[in-house]
Amino acid sequence: MNDHTPHLSELAFRETHGVAVSLVWNRVTDGVTVIVNDLGSGGSFEIAAPAAKAMDVFRHPYAYASDVLAA
Image 1 (tube, rainbow, N blue to C red):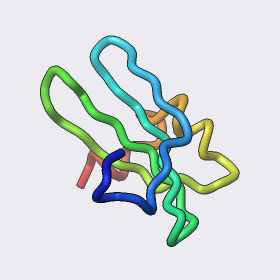
Image 2 (cartoon, rainbow, N blue to C red; image 1 turned 180 degrees about the vertical axis):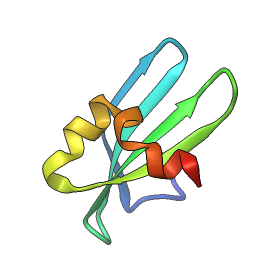
Image 3 (cartoon, helix red, strand yellow; image 1 turned 120 degrees about the horizontal axis):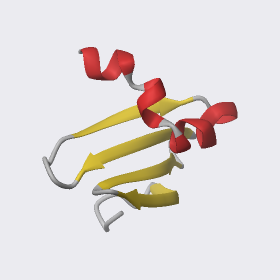
């Protein structure tokens, strides 16, 4: 997170095999998003996560990404 996004809070972060995954909470909208960055290719995507499943989406983002990646 940076100074340009003061309304966002990173709740969790992990990096494995060059893929960084962040769980981010937006204080303004009260929404939760999982952000996936492939550090090798530079590709990334975001998934709006229902609050009840936020940690599952964080742990397994590719299982929830089919609609995002198909677009």
